[in-house]
Amino acid sequence: MSMVDVTGKKLVYREAVAEGVIRLRPETVRLIKEGRVEKGDVFDVTRVAVVLAVKKTSELLPLTHPIPVTHVDVGFDIPTEDSVKVTVRVKTIAQTGVEMEALTGVVAGLLNIWDMVKKYEKDEGGQYPYTRIEGVRVVSKVKSETS
Image 1: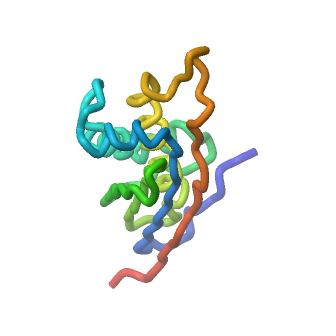
Image 2: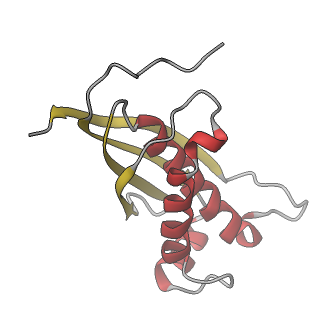
Image 3: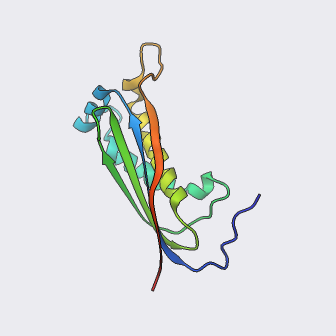
């Protein structure tokens, strides 16, 4: 087991976009949209959670390289009445890509949303029959020589 040796690789502009969806009760999505979640603004707090997770990826995944992240962009969409989509774009100039950083950001964002709304998602037995995270994937990646 070892990290991939990137010593001989050139510094290159790299970008990755990842996304994922959390399914929630329609009533919970409505609370998010209306800014009425007790713990606070779900999108503001989730943006911070995503950025922190992206920056800590190499601490969480032991064989990833610490990468100088130069930009993180977080987007939210409500594609259906019972879902919230999180999209994360990560940029760097480095010797290796940022797909894992983008994926880590998405997962942390989705988990943060779950944490902030879990009170509204539990059934009478304290379970989460409606809540699920799905469709986490890399949407695109870019690699281009810098000037």
